[in-house]
Length: 365
Image 1: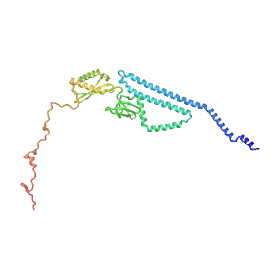
Image 2 (image 1 turned 90 degrees about the horizontal axis):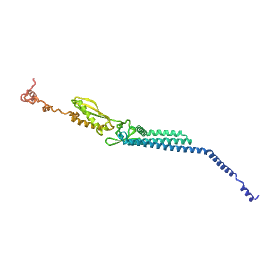
Image 3 (image 1 turned 45 degrees about the vertical axis):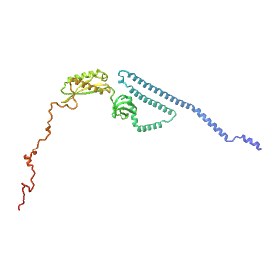
Image 4 (image 1 turned 180 degrees about the vertical axis):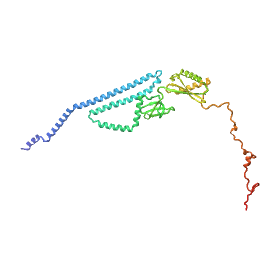
């Protein structure tokens, strides 16, 4: 056979590697198609479930946040509606209610977002067949480490949350926090700002407050002590004080600051030079000091008109007392001042030897 006849035959004969390559490619494509055909339904199911979880979490978070915002706005509107009434400024502080409601709304929105999105994320991981045990364990350890390192911050935050929820105090209240005393000008989740009596601003951490005394809630008590001479007529003293209290309760602005009649509790102390009559009155919160000052002022003027003397400070000097004898502090004259006195003669010095009148002593043999 000649070479021209052999070459076409060799070209027509396939190589042994070609069939293997084509068969492997066909097999790989077939396996991939069969894998996709077998799993596309599960993939679609997983994708739809994840999408549904995300949509539901987003919608639920939006609805909850809007509901909280509307609730806070309604609380603020109710506070503004009562503010214009007669006792609105006393019973409702709009700024206090606004800050308290905003703080509560911020906390509620943050907690709602954390719970909803956190739950949605865990559900997505569960759908993806991811084991959540190691993740939860790691999160627990990290939470313990963060809580231990920032325990003061966590304490301040939790104390602020419970303080706001329980409405222990608010903006405009006069409080005694132990470490500082003053008027509350701002309430936060971590720090509370107080303005002291001298104008200073105190930053008090909520976690450091062990006890709190609110001087602006409920009512206050004004107490006045009236000290008079023991010779004064107690019935007359009672009548004058009663007239002063009744007249003060009928005048503005004391008719609003006094929440009850001025009570004469009786004698609080009886001494040889004085006796003390104790008065008490229920007043508007924070107005007890002004009521006490005004009551003392009116009682002093009324006692001056009635001729009743108040007692206080140093006792007055008696007018009929005889003047002190200036010679009382001078020592009596001494007998030694007279040189002719026997005492002076006996104190004469002993004469020296060899002098006149001296006695010479010799030793006998």
